[in-house]
Image (cartoon, rainbow over all chains, first blue to last red; front, side):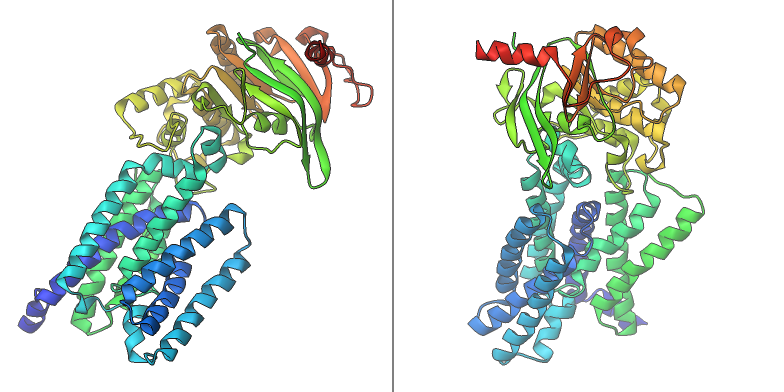
Length: 271
Length: 250
């Protein structure tokens, strides 16, 4: 057990804990606005699209993170346009699957098909550099602060777009802010849990929190706490059981729902 | 002083069908007006058009003398949608949070301060529902939700209140209490436009004018003079509207 304890406090594990904690704080907050807009799967779709950026970056010899960020940004602009026009979810399905298929194909064309892409699809949190960790912490801090500051206008626009418009709020811009925040989470979460799983960090803690919370703010806070718990417990479990961290973290996030359900059944209600 | 709200020859179409045709109606400052008419008459659409939520096929709307497209003083308006348009769709939202959202007037940070909480409590008190503050909106009964939506419209102290069937489906006692509140805030000089099915209970509570809608304005006048059978759109004569049109021509 001494070996495992040493493992937990080794520098690469500490970097993993810090980066995971940072992203696990931001993701559920962004997810609160997504789920309120009934866009729980949007984070998943953005992850698919960002993967096309990774493939493109391989092909062009650019950093994968830059490719993912560029494509996530373009995707957000396209999604903003489509969502404002009330597009059917079948259109989203077409775009999202095209993204992941393009990513695989581009990666293969670049001669990087195989092991190299696993880290981007399912995360590689144990190989984070100090710089990447600090970037995650800085970006998540900025994101959490901004979302907390603009929480009520964003909540109003997410829950009741008509009222928001009737009160003179720029509902289109507020939607764009939520989508951009989701894109940021996708890029930050790429190395933590991977592009295929990052959507889960935005959706699952919120789904669990909605069962226990009686208010919007309480939902956001509970989701944040749930996301942190899943992140930390998932990392510890993965270290002890020698499992991929991304899968373990998301499985803990998935466990939040039945846990919240049982607590709600027992009469627990918060906020 | 320009009228608070003017619909001028307003037409609205949806899916190839006209919902409103050439409706002209003017609401003066401090007026208390009821909009009546059968189901599907376009009452809600007329209110929503004034909020810029419905595109116009023809005509124009002015709020406080300003063309709708240029109007920015949204803090002067309070709106309560019909109950089935309640926000959230089951997402957790407390009554206090919902009513407090009536105070948000821009994208700028708007923390839930003690001042916000005090205004919210005041509005809930006025509607007789202070005990609901912490309840999730999706657990409210129809009548409770109705009052919460009215509280949100009132909370900002707006000059012009547009209330869409605030008393639909609530019990008699609640309805009377709500109408007393309307009379009280009208007494403070605020302008009210209330969409309702019937006028029962409103007439004796300070209602000043009635406009009957059936795709177009079919009747307009004093509450006690409302005919038992409202004219059809074909035979309807709205003196008020005609006067308005004559004025504009002159």
